[in-house]
Image (cartoon, rainbow, N blue to C red; front, side):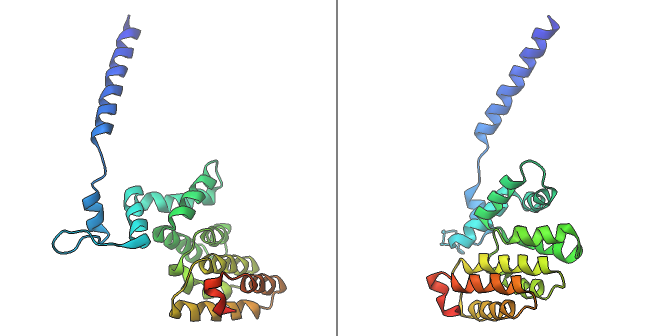
Length: 199
């Protein structure tokens, strides 16, 4: 008999949770306001893909995104799912976490892994860091830095970013290591049409 009572209580709790979940939603107006998507009169203005990414960061939670980078570094089951999510949303928060790990754990496997992961979803925000990666004494960091650059070059660049990317390609092609030079050359050879001026 006590067993039946426990089941009844559990069933009641489950229905309360289901009711609560159905009444909770996303306050899209608040999210739009947080990403700068509302003007002074409260009307919505277009924020583009960058605004949509920032909204996803808010919805998922910045700490969760930082934790996703750390979890990927752990290589525990589920880490590649975390990587796919980061690759889709291209979170600036996650990019910053990768760079933070590189800076604070320099010379460690975690630092190397963080730069490698960054190469899966880096945007132009990460472009200034590539020079630091290419200056690193470790060949593996320089190779991962080239991977970061390749990811960035998969998207269009503005004039200023284009100049920096061209200088970084030149730097990679003059690296003392043959493999770094070769991979950089491959990137330059296979640039998307919109970045062909960097050849």
